[in-house]
Length: 156
Image (cartoon, rainbow, N blue to C red; front, side, top):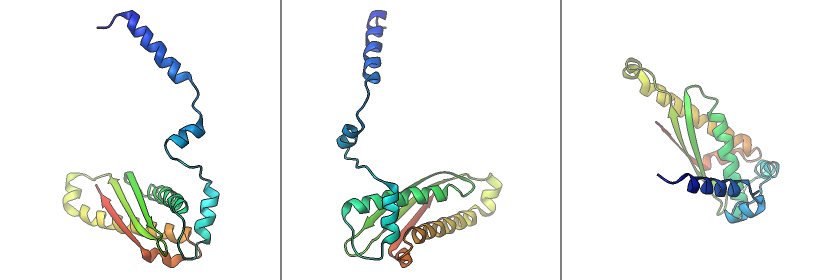
């Protein structure tokens, strides 16, 4: 056991470190995070009608799509958690992969034996439909872009 004297000294040091304000711009620079205006990204996505984009815009679109898809998926009952990852490629036109991992609230043992695989297949189709709708809603001027996405859904 440490002496009470040393414990209070370490608590004072922790309090001092925690009470110093953190400069947001320095913190963002340290971790390579750039300021993002959501309205600008929505306008960029909404007006997209084909062609390549710069890397910064691609990253912003990825983040925006992730958030929109995740929010839509949480509207489905029995979803306990979800993780959405969007990977875009904008070499000539935007295409990409969307990987979704869902934590599903399982039923009892008897229900599982009688048809949970059917429920999981239906849930997978429902999630894919939701993702396709979000992509079409986001890219209003280029809805056929949905065909350029691979959507993978894993349900645990």
